[in-house]
Image (cartoon, rainbow over all chains, first blue to last red):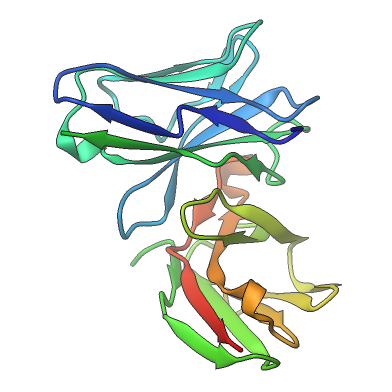
Length: 114
Length: 113
């Protein structure tokens, strides 16, 4: 499977717990983007990362959310002390080129906070 | 006013019909325009992308951009039941950033056999 991979596909967390979402980009891609899709809302950009660097985090909430893309391994979106409003589908996309509009999306992680 | 407006539908058409999907936008700085298809409970799939104004054709799909009107369209010819999905428009280019995509809410399309 050469596509973008995300895991887990479904994640249930109680309020106050931490959520970790993982994304492996397409083979050969080194640019990763995270988006959030709230119910009845469009996809919203959160953050753009290259290996070991955060390039654009203009869409990230200021508190509780963080993202990384280490030299080895998948990109991780971490949400600390989750609240019910964090329940959403989180999509990762990757691109071959730097800061590219040509992005390929993974299947998403559906986070439910109870 | 939202940056990108898209009629959510739902839009229902018979098989074989020509489908027209549209988005309007307010920010004249957008330079790149994309259409994605999203099946239920799946990730968005990139269909087409265009730069600036003009038309682009790919098989049964045609994308049009009219920057003077801040209006983009996706036409689907000879629509098939397998085209039933939500179609998302997306744009970028503000502040020189191509990768920060701004999405419409999506139009849900149903093609009836």
